Length: 298
Image (cartoon, rainbow, N blue to C red; front, side, top):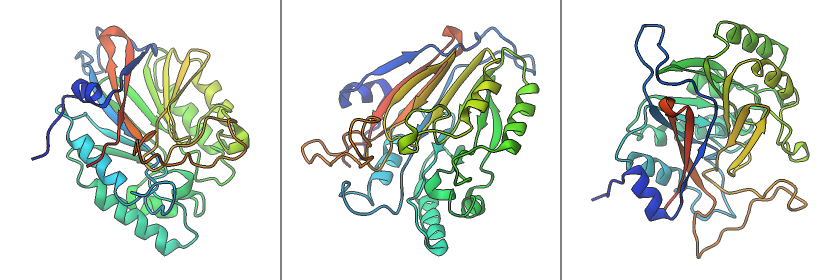
């Protein structure tokens, strides 16, 4: 029988801890448009599962995503929803193979008990066909949704092979932000970082600075992204940016080695550097609380 874990007990058993980041949330006393109060909640961020990848460094390439699904299902308190921040599948030049991988990925994550899932493409999913296959399986590559007083904005900085958002999407973002009050709680979801983390390794968005400029006048903005296969935290002014670990292989710290080659597998510590994140929106304390959870052996 599979053991179910309390989230904090799970962290304790796995030997990892939570980190608190203050991201300028408005307090719980603010009213919703319907006159109610904002409620604390949490969601899970998974990223960079690269389904279809084979070979070194991950000898369990066909099992890691399934283990992550099982780990999320084992949380004693289910999240309100789940977000996948891109690179659901590994790149392929073959359109039929791309669709097969997207189909298999969809079948695997259908085992998640939480059915409110928001998918975003990565460049591995979308840059070779401008997101055409991704849209067939998962719908729009950019969208917004609201949950318990927080406005979520999913941006597409991968369908354009030039790693750009593009003027049309920036205009869409500007119009959406105009519909929000200046002190709205806003979470932006992207695949690539919006700031120039390390452009030499494609860890940037060519016009990401324009998106940050549009977001800067808003009081309460937090960005969650993937792509770099490691935990990373950065402030641009008052905007906090948080990168998530991946589910297939970890990548090196920016500029720490000549090439962006995946880190080697350590048989003594399998799945080291892989994991997912839960994000607690604690509006009463005006912060997000991020906790990094590992992928474990089944």
